[in-house]
Length: 218
Image (cartoon, rainbow, N blue to C red; front, side, top):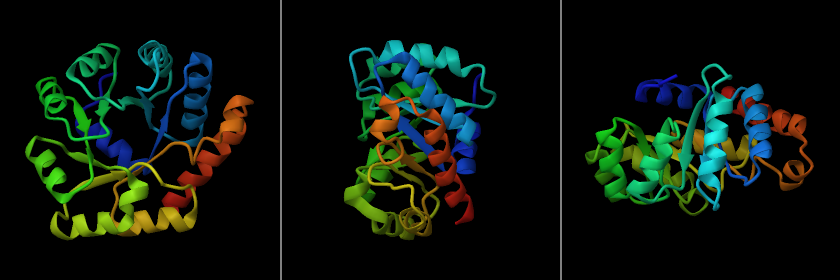
């Protein structure tokens, strides 16, 4: 299924959280994605960190087709070549840790949602001028909720997704959403290493579901 940019943005804002995950084992990646979907996640970001990330992503995309409404994107993209490779593999959206004009050009040409990493108002404004509709506040643990509040004061229409330093607690999530984020990206804080190693997918599902319920209550 082909998702439009507005479909993807609606799904992001609807659940309020995007799990950010990478693993070299295809079956583990499938297990984590399934647990996320069962918990209520509808947008999932696999990250391009590892020699076989493209291979794992292709398998994930094929697997994702059985889950109705599941949007699957790729993160940690730095070059136009990577954009083209992962779009060919079926990526629904592209996320970068930085604002990279050449990535923007390819994504715009193919009418694909791209989410650049931005750490200043200047970067966010420039990304907006390049056509970005969602902006990744990165690294979130360095910028903090106060950065989001400051940006929203001058650019209130901006949709911001912090990644890095977001914790699945009422206190932390409350601060981010009070500051005005549209959704959050969450990785290591959400997926405990020992649970992944021991394939405790039911525990992961419960943890993710709990985080989503906190977000809905805010």
